[in-house]
Length: 273
Image (tube, rainbow, N blue to C red; front, side):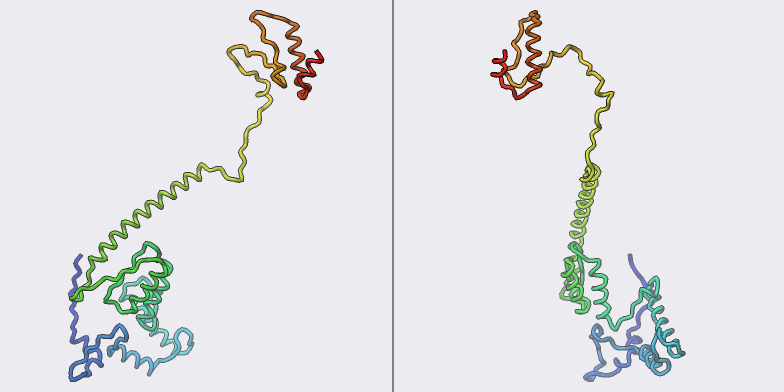
């Protein structure tokens, strides 16, 4: 999206706002290039500071007298001016610091330590002042994020395409990682839904009296089951159609004895017979 502005900056008018730039250096107009370290003050700032110190210098927010009230009004008025200039929602978003270096370190430590981590990409440029380079480099190393400095070519232009490729790859990697994490969480939820808690016993319903009285339904007669203590006590097989009541009686005796005295040996049974 193209951005256009009907107002053009007048470099000569802006230069005239800084009294120190009217001072010649080495027989030539001063060209000051160290504003990132210590910025020069325009006449508007110098006049406002002079007026404050000459007419209303007092402690802000804590003084109950007229000078203190006037100082507080000027202080908070400046905050509202900056808020409107930056289009911030409230004046609570405007924090005054002693300079850009302190402000950048405050953002890097207060925001970076809580929001950056492994998988994040911190981008700066090789053209940055150390105040906007070193803090981010340190925070990235401390949080596990990756730090990238966009290089500049021989014309002083940033080679943005280099970091663009890094961001694209990093975005794809983070998307894959997010999908894998979502699949893992879904697997955990499914496992949890089928898992029986460790402290919950497995309850097996006990048979009721009606269940014990009911005889199982069978399609044919089952053979008679004889309980014995050893193989030697098994009854002699009968021929088909042989119905010997004495043999059946002997078998019943042996079976009852085996149940009554399971420790009785076969030799004792033979001697008794």
